[in-house]
Each structure stands twice: as structure tokens, then as C-alpha cells.
Length: 450
Ligand SMILES: Cc1cc2nc3c(=O)[nH]c(=O)nc-3n(C[C@H](O)[C@H](O)[C@H](O)COP(=O)(O)OP(=O)(O)OC[C@H]3O[C@@H](n4cnc5c(N)ncnc54)[C@H](O)[C@@H]3O)c2cc1C
Image 1 (cartoon, protein in one colour):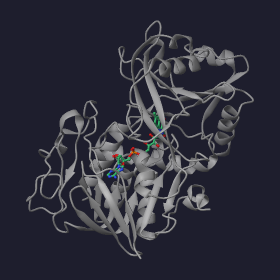
Image 2 (image 1 turned 30 degrees about the vertical axis):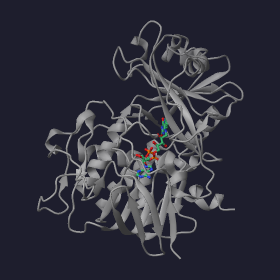
Image 3 (image 1 turned 180 degrees about the vertical axis):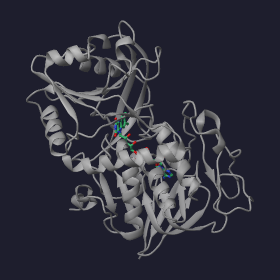
Image 4 (image 1 turned 180 degrees about the horizontal axis):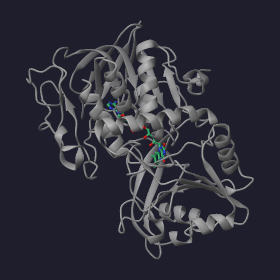
């Protein structure tokens, strides 16, 4: 019996568009984007040029259409969701010559899921577990590869500072991971830390761990670059097309959307905070509301510019979540972005309160002002985003527990973005060979199967 999964309301909302300046090289802007109302396919048809990438730079920096009319309805692999992970999978699969259809309910990059807000920390000394380090090292290589291929700068190296009590988990585990994998760090006593980074005022008993190769990614640029690379390799990408249901037999899948039906040998589900709805499984996923705030520090951004202020993660008070932030990457009027990592506010992408309240911002300021006194400045703007948490805060990546023709990747627990390209590589392996050369046992969906 094929497995049938139906989900969600039938509507497809237009997402908010990123207003970031588009950095795609002009030579790649090939035409206007349009959606054929009959077929739902994105892009102008009739090019007479199968697998030729077609792209446009739409309003707000949206790009990306492609056409491949050779096999309009049947594919090797269908990808449900083209955010951070789905766009990476599309790129890797298409580069391997797979006939790929990628579907997204919105036009990525968009601001309704987990991959917006202008910055994501990338770092190597992984306190969460040293098991992630081989993956993050490979991710660095792959981000660099995409930079070379697209001409879009993706990794912005500022260095990264982890700050917390010398006996606390955050600092101890960061140092242990760095030692195990020979990652370049400097361990800074409070006086050294304050001298090197005057914006910080460490607590007595704090240690700083400065990681040289840490920095940030601009998620919207990364997703554009991955989608663009996928298109160049022949992927067919449909935007503003929501998957309504899918059916999986052992050797093929059928997918029904707001615009049509498609079949493939394999389905990859990378639905981010919509994963519970898209998977219709019992995986223990919980979505939390996260708030990020851009604050103009007291006294201005001078001491917070990227050449003198690193990305950072600061240990929370007992029982409280850690906080983190970025230098002033948007110039003198952009402020610095700060946030708390984690929240008790469970929601779904449909029910989340996207309004910002004074208490949201106060909580962030209070969490940081002990170590960064200038943070008690003016709020410039704030935005909500969504984490998809697993109970152990490790990712879920692997074959669907019951359906071999379906691979799932979800539950990135607020720290997945930096890994996106290596996760794309892993998903390509799982979809084409049922295996990955990367160490992914930690992420097995089976750990939640009982
Ligand atoms: C505030 C915040 C800060 C973070 N900071 C960091 C950080 O510093 N470093 C780091 O490494 N990670 C960080 N993360 C985590 C990281 O951003 C996420 O792990 C990552 O973006 C998740 O990507 P995704 O592809 O799973 O989800 P998304 O990028 O949200 O993509 C899911 C896609 O699936 C589509 N979709 C869903 N359902 C359907 C359907 N039925 N039909 C069609 N399309 C569908 C959606 O439209 C969406 O485009 C942060 C996350 C947040 C929210």
C-alpha cells in the first residue's frame, strides 16, 4: 500500500520579500519571471533549450526560474521546500546530473520560515558536539566553492567570541572541541578579553574563546546562490507552489501541489518549520518563536564595526538561554543584531505571533547588558523567526523511518544554517545511493522511532 500524506490548508500565501540588494552578477539576469497560470511552471516557456537555466532578478532581489520541458511531470528527485537545506539539495543533485524538481510555497529567500534576517553565525569549534566539526569543515569548503561558482561572497570572516564562566559548559566544550580538531582559538582571561574587545565587559570568572575563522553568512545571499547554482545545473524550480499531499510507494512518489501533480523516484522533504505538517509523522518536533533585534548601541556603532567586534555567543545566567549577536554589518545606521538562542514560546508557522512586543526586546537587552553595557541603546527594528527543535537539539537527517523512497531533513534546532551545503551533499547521497560518506549517525530519524 502506498503511503498517502495530505496536509495543511489549501492556501498559498505570498511571502514577504527580502529587500536586500541583489548581489547576483548581472550577466546571470536572463529574463523576466512569470508563472504560467495553466501549468504553474515558473519561467518563460518555449525556449527550445531544454535544461537551460533561466533566471530573473525580480523585485527585492528574488531570482530564479528554470525551465526543462523535456520531462515536464516526471523527475528523478522532487524536493519539498527550497529554503536553506532544500536549495542546497537541489544544487547538489542537479550537479550530479539528476533531473530535479524543487517546489516552494513562497519565493525563496523569504521571511516566513527560518532563513531570513541578514546574518547567521558560522564557526568551527562546535560546543554542541565535536561530531559536527567534520561536517562544518566540509561546509566551509562547499560555501567557498559556491562563492567561486557564483561570484557571490558568502562567508564573512569576523572571528567569533564565545564568552562564559570558565567552569561553564559553553566555554569548556568549545575549548575541548577546538583542541580535538586543532581549530585555531585564543583563550582570553577577562582582562585580555576587555583589552582586545573593549565593547565587552566580562563578568569575574569569565573566559573568552576567540575563534579566528568564525564569522557570518547572509542567509538570503546563500539561498540565492544555491538556487542559482541548481538552475545552472538544470534543476527545475517552481515557486509559489505549495505541496498539498504526497504518496510514497517503495520505488516512486507522487506529489500533488496547488498547480499540478508530479512523480519521481525519490522525495526529499526539507520543509523547515512546516516539517511536522509536511511529514505527517510522529517525530518530536517543536517550533519556537524567536525574536532578533537590531539595536543602535549607546555611543554609536564605532566600537562594533566588523573589524573590531566579532560575532559572539554569551552564556546565559543559570537556567537561561545563551545570547548571541553580530557586529554592525549594515553600516553606521544599521545597529547590531542581537538575540536569545532558544525560547519557550511554542507555535506553528501559522499561529506564530509575528508582532514585536516591548518585553521581547527587553528580554534580549537584559540578557546581554551585563557583558555589553552599550547594548541598552535604541531599538532600530526587530523581527520574528522560527526554530524547529528536537528534544536532543541534534538534527534529523535520513531516510523516512517507513518509506525508503523519501528522505527527510528537519529539526535543525537553531543551529543548522552554517551546514546547509554539506547537508545538501548528504541529501544528494541519500537520494541517489541510499547512503552518505559523511558521519550522520547522530542525526538518524530512527532515534525517535520508539
Ligand atoms: C533567528 C534565528 C537565528 C539563527 N541563527 C543561526 C546561526 O547563527 N547559525 C546557524 O547555523 N543557524 C542558525 N539558525 C538556524 C538556521 O537558520 C536553520 O536551521 C535553517 O535556516 C533551517 O533551514 P530549513 O531549510 O530547514 O528551513 P527553511 O529555510 O525555513 O526552508 C523551508 C522551506 O520549505 C518550504 N515549504 C514548507 N512547506 C511547504 C509545502 N507544503 N510546499 C512547498 N514548500 C514548503 C517553505 O516555504 C520554506 O521555504 C537560526 C535560525 C533562526 C530562526
